Image (cartoon, rainbow, N blue to C red; front, side):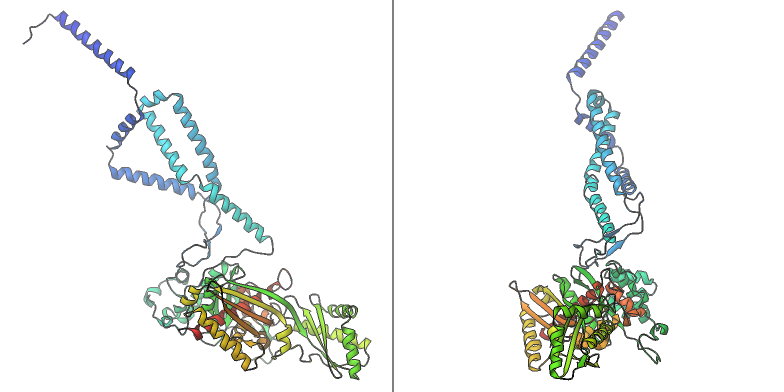
Length: 614
């Protein structure tokens, strides 16, 4: 026990002890720096007291609210194209979003605001760092703000410099494209479902049951087709046949919309209907009804860098399915490239002179350039679009056959060239009084008959189309090899047709595809005779791939006049993207010729795969 001290002594000792502690605390404060780590430890300790579930929920809610407000703050709907690298399981199509879209210009504004605010906060902190370091509340505010800036910089800062600029440029590009005659169209991947009658998998029962689909709307079923949940060729197995057609029409209308042909199927009837007033005086006489033909749609087929869908009217089973497989193989490769070599419809009047000498004089007179210019003027006085390109006289004794070739714009041109030919004959009668017109068409045109002159000199549109099919596509899609398919073409289409003395028949079944497209688009089906002239060539490339080419010198098509004015046929032309007259005369008719040639090549390619397959 320590002896008790006087009260005054105890008080002096207590004051001295207190003074000593304050002095030591002051020295410790002056000599010790408070670090950010120490403050962070204090903050973490305080945060640890908050339950982890609540803290996590708070962070998620704040992040979601911020992202929603930033990216969905209104705006107009835009059209954007799904990237070409999208998975094959999802059909590539142009997606039209009807909901609110990001206001991309806000991101740029926020970028400037975020950078400015961040720099200001750093400056404020640096101006009085010691006070902020010793003030927990102030330090917490700065750290929280900087964390927010870092999240924004990592998450959103670069968007306005990449996506926003590209989107704005894309919108400007689309606007400028719409103001011109040419349009940029989407390129679709190969069709996923490609039923072929010889493939057993085509007859497999669908995995979905009918009861699962009855309650769904046609729009929902159409979306299921587009996303691959239902194969389009299995709709009749799952739905009522009429409803299956309605659903398929919705799916194809969506696909056609993405290539600039939306609404094309509106005027293509799917029920029994025909406006007979459109037929009277134009297409048929003594009408008692009409014969409906089913129309199938093949594609997408990549043709000259664009996706096209091709309507085919036929009653021959497997033709559409087989052609669709050829389209798939071509699109899986590099796509098809088509070129117009010549464009001119012909008419060859037969005139008769008094002697062979006079016939020869007429021939020589017509071949003189100055005289041709006179005939050209007479011909073109009868038409606003037709242009006389050449006159080729052929003498047979007293007869002279004047083969006149005429550019007819978007019309097939038979009426145009016939009317112009009459004007030429009337002028020639003034020069050669003994000339007698035997027939306006002397069969050297040659129209609707197999003839070497069409095979050699061409008639209508002369087209060459080609494609390269990778060898793995030949194996997986066509179920054969490059060597086998090349040998099949040589022995069948080249040697076999030569042994048969064929004229323009060096192909598998060009007439099948030509006629089907002709019937769907309102062409003259009888002209499939010369329009089906085709030689198909196949070679193995140095890389082991398959090169295929079809040369068709006499495709006779038009997009105005004749059957093209009927609603259903006009709808099919619209689906292709060549309805009516083109911006430049002849553009739409040329596009239709490209499509006919490409469809012929696709049908032949698939046919070869069946013949040369395993």
